Length: 333
Image (cartoon, rainbow, N blue to C red):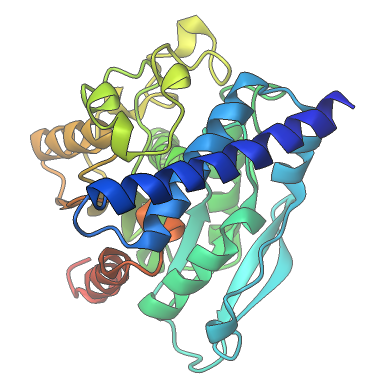
């Protein structure tokens, strides 16, 4: 009964947030000039639902939903992209195959976001399918163990195992791009830090969307951009000890903002100008520059956290996918 009330509370909160946002926009105009009505509603609804969920992070039904839901490929891409389940080492991963052209520009290894506590590869199928189509690439999206049941370094262990499994399949590392959004972006960096330490060949590049790199939540943009993002401010005002114990918060494979990036492959980093952890991406770019890594940071004005997945209809999302495709095609990547 408590869980049903929780779900009802989330539904009501989302509905009320959308109503408030509608009246606010009618009276005061858009929150940000580029936001469409649909974007206003999406951000307001997501913020309300996530805020309620953050109050009861251990709700079993909500957590099971996050681990099991499988979104479909967008209808517009069903003739171009197919997803089927394959074994990637010991894990059952999503494998994306393009149907329109057998020649791939690259193979993406994609890690989903969710703060290390929510989600699975299926929650991100719509976005990864769009990425695969735009970049003319194949992709594998593996799961990884989630906190708080499995804490750091379990997710990193799973991520490096997935990367090893790709190499064991005979895929040349020079054709692999390791990618991820939010916590998945942090995990991509952590896995490559582990790969470098173990002497495993590094991939062709690293592609990151709103990477979550600092478990201590020291980004000055967290309170600054809270009104234009949907992440839970209550969770970002204290360290993330659900994923990592206090003594591990500064480990470079838990908080990659602390990693020495020397020797890393080229990186393309996207961040929203209106997102709360924008400063995570900015500091990551600074660290890459200091280490001599070829890193490009694209800050998309007025966009929220992981906008290409959340508001794919925005022109900013289309630009992001085009930039990804152009970067992957670069001969020196």
